[in-house]
Amino acid sequence: MISMAEYIWMDGAQPTQRLRSKTKIVPMENIENVTLEHFPEWGFDGSSTYQAQGHSSDLVLKPVCFVDDPIRGRGNFLVMCEVMNVDGTPHETNSRAKLRKTLEDGAAKEDPWFGFEQEYTLFRGRTPLGWPEDGYPAPQGPFYCGVGADEVFGRQLVEEHMQLCIDAGLMIYGINAEVMPGQWEYQVGYRGVKEESADALATSDHNWFARWLLYRIGEDHGITATLHPKPVRGDWNGAGQHTNFSTKSLRDPATGTQTMKTYLQRLENKHMDHIKVYGADLHDRLTGAHETCHINEFRSGPSDRGASIRIPIAMQKEGCGYLEDRRPGANADPYVIADRILRTICDL
Image: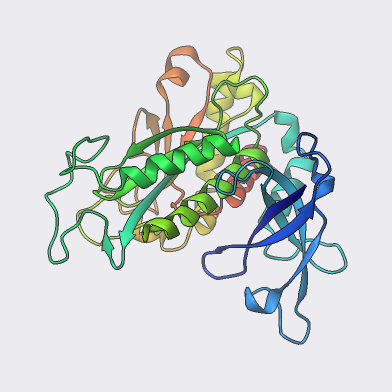
């Protein structure tokens, strides 16, 4: 049969990379036994994606993982690609390759798991969804995990997005309306399914797939999802990408507490190195208000949503589990987040 494969990659836009994609028609003998080898490398014009000059514009899309395409239906696929130079080396904008190298350099021995809490804000035109065209809605308070047409906006799109992620086989494990009206969150990561791996590459891939699906169905609804960390100025929550992470020693009751202390010290020592790569315009969000720690301060604490690193209840009670990095902005690259955390906690 003939399959449609949507090749997806990140461009070279600065300061925040954008998603790009194009469709390749791929003959498939048996859609029940599809492997990565069924998707050939493909070229593209890097001069149109801020990744090359016009006089030498050819770049290569190298498929690295794929999932079912829940929009086009059975027998079609979404294919995540790394951008490569024509000589086979990773392009400078290929952040996934940098994460791969960090894992190969020793981080993989720690069996790291990651989860991303991806916040986003829905806009129709220049106005956040549910906001009056002139003025502001009621002060934030009733909107978080709210219900009702006067408190929640965009649920139809959000529910559709969640179902598409499930149909694609992505590791989505929850959604909720957020503090600011028109703002939502989905979570990708460990969800207790035996055949799934919440490793750094897999969960980062899945978050990028989920973002692509969110943008794609936004086209059908005439709604734009933005990842700006402070989509509305003033007394409104920003949008983050809280990142949960653990290693085998952090998950072990015998070593968890001491490992946590070591990790927290290393994270504090490298605080500004993290801030530099945790998303553009992060200073607009990390003000010390609205459930954030100030951008120039590092603080950790049990159940503290105003800290840089929150220590969850399970970690406190059982002496093992995971930590939550609350600093990354919604627009940060999950590959970069995972890479920076691993290089810090593994002292690479």
